[in-house]
Every structure is written in C-alpha cells, then in structure tokens.
Amino acid sequence: MSTISSSRTLHRLIYMSRITIPPIDLQAEVGEIIRTSIRRNREVAVTGLLLVHDGWFLQALEGPAEAVLTTYGRICDDPRHVDAKVLGAGPADARSFADWNMCARRVTAADDAILDTLEMRSKFEPQRLEPGSALRLLQAVRGIQERTQLRAMR
Ligand SMILES: Cc1cc2nc3c(=O)[nH]c(=O)nc-3n(C[C@H](O)[C@H](O)[C@H](O)COP(=O)(O)O)c2cc1C
Image (spheres, rainbow, N blue to C red):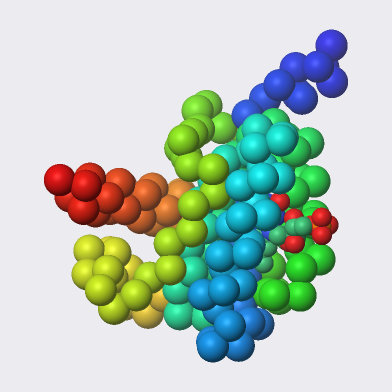
C-alpha cells in the first residue's frame, strides 16, 4: 500500500547547475533540450520550468516521484551542464507548473520584468537560494512570461 500511495504522490524537485554550453551554441542547444523535454516529460506526466540565466540553469520538475527522480538522474548525466545541486525536493500539494510542459525562459536584455525580479537579488546566485525562494522565483518567471505572452497576443 505504501508503495502505491508514494508512487501517486506529487513530487517537486528544484535544482540549479552551471551551463557548459559555449554561448554561441546556447540558443540552439536550449531549443534541443526543450524539444526533448517536452516529448519525454509528457510520456511520464512531468511538468516544470527551465530558467536559463547568466551561466546558470534553474529548473523545477514536478510529477510522480519516480518519474521526477528518473528524469533528474538522466539530466545529471548530461554534459551540457555541471555541478547540479538540488535546492529542494519533496512532496508537493499541487503542481505550480501544471500547464508548463517544460518551457524554457532564457532571460534576455529585453525581459525587463524578469530582470527586475532577478535583480531584486542583487547578484543571481541560485546555489544560495532557499527552496521556497527558488520556487517563488520560478513561479514569478512563469507569471511574468504568461502576462508577456498575453500582451503579445492582444
Ligand atoms: C538543463 C537541462 C535540463 C533538461 N531537462 C530535461 C527534462 O526536463 N526532461 C528530459 O527528458 N530531458 C531533459 N534534459 C535532457 C536530458 O539530459 C537528456 O539529454 C534527454 O532526456 C535524452 O536522454 P537520453 O539520451 O538518455 O534518451 C535536460 C538537459 C539539460 C542540460
């Protein structure tokens, strides 16, 4: 019974890592990561958000515990980043990125609203983020991106 209930529990894992991709290849490689992630995550009911900023990846993964851990294990073996560090992992009441099949947000100079949010933490040092702060940051990025997309559609 306990195995069944734990496999049904929603888990969230947030980690950060340092990007090893040469800057010139970043856009294409992130595009490739997203395409693979959408396909693979959909198969195992994992959702999340990937933030690409200033040499760092910050990613949330949500879904059934086993799927989240298997996915994270695969991600850790990926040479496109190093020094992966889990900022927080455990059961979650509800998905924060339910309709986000691993969208990436690369923060560019045009992303004023996101940059404002990041700059509130004077220097972006995700390895220092508390789990709750890391989640709030990713939720803020999601909210900003949703609003930006809505504005763009009008
Ligand atoms: C920062 C980063 C995030 C990634 N996120 C995911 C993800 O959410 N889901 C996924 O399936 N693969 C993700 N990948 C890609 C995996 O590392 C791996 O390349 C991919 O799953 C294919 O694995 P395979 O070659 O063993 O089939 C990510 C890679 C990086 C560098």
